[in-house]
Length: 203
Image (cartoon, rainbow, N blue to C red; front, side):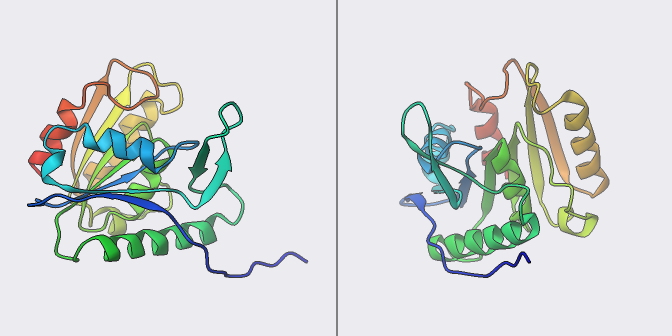
């Protein structure tokens, strides 16, 4: 008989404070990446030096085979609903520790991290690069999101053009302000983050 049990686990996140923070920019890395990877991306966004930055690392750590580098993922199909609940509680604790509830929030996810950004984004804005809107989020949950920058590389075979269009339409139907753009790239973070900076500045 299969059973599950709750336990305590320690997560890891990085913080880059700002002297006069305009808000909190929160990052979620992709599969097989780590908090350092997403922190580097966020710090490269124009104007991000005026924001406090938090890069949260997935709880499921493992060794990258080729380099022995420690990387992480957010979840697998196994016990999916329990993993979602654990991750949301984890993210909430990171945010409580990093900033007051009144802080302006922008969540930025890449690939697998996009789903986490959307799940945690009540009353926040979202930068979503190369990942789809989680299917379990209903209209009530999505309608709490303020605005979304949806980004897809034209050569991305993982996040298809069809799914990209469906996500944009789904968000718009929920009353979310959406800017959907395609860039000349594959399944990757934009090499030129200027458009991300424009979105953050106007959030």
